[in-house]
Image (cartoon, rainbow, N blue to C red; front, side, top):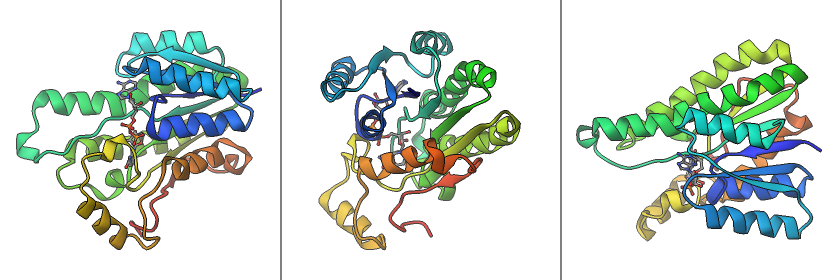
Length: 239
Ligand code: NAD
């Protein structure tokens, strides 16, 4: 049985990904930071469906906490680096602290998690790392400068790592979603949503399950000859 570690899995895309992996028969390690109850509820629901789950608390911005989480997980075959934070603000209003925190969670979190799982993957000469970027990491998002920079950094890290780890049979890819219906976008007004749907060729906002299917594809045999790539479930919003 393969083990997947999904960071930030208490809700949203991470939660949908954890559920999708459980249904595919993976052992699922559910990481949470602040939402322990939600993570435990998810684990209980998946266990009731027959899945093997483990709930692990850690702030991905904290290297020591991430190392301890990975030690408790045991061998990790697939890392889904999903934990992330966003925030909308004019660039001139962004504080140094907000900038550092956005990079620490979205980008340095990937550095910590990848470094922690890699010794095991290198020993086994097999592994898959899937990191959540964003369309804003590709195109840049107005009023989301720190987030866009962090998510562009994720793409750079993934591409470089894919080259370094290819000879060890470790695939490293990005999933860069468009606008997805999660708590991250709860501030969107009905008018914003309607405008987004109108601008999207597939005429809707994405669901966490849409993204989970892309992640699952890259983690499975479909992803065996894919590395250093950016798969963007965005409904055609970015073409
Ligand atoms: P969400 O806010 O619903 O979930 C984010 C998850 O990350 C939560 O479980 C949260 O507790 C966790 N998290 C936050 N900080 C953490 C930390 N320091 N350590 C561990 N966990 C932490 O958001 P979502 O929409 O599900 O986003 C998931 C990923 O997808 C993020 O990386 C996000 O940037 C990316 N993404 C989302 C969208 C979207 O429109 N929702 C679009 C593109 C990319």
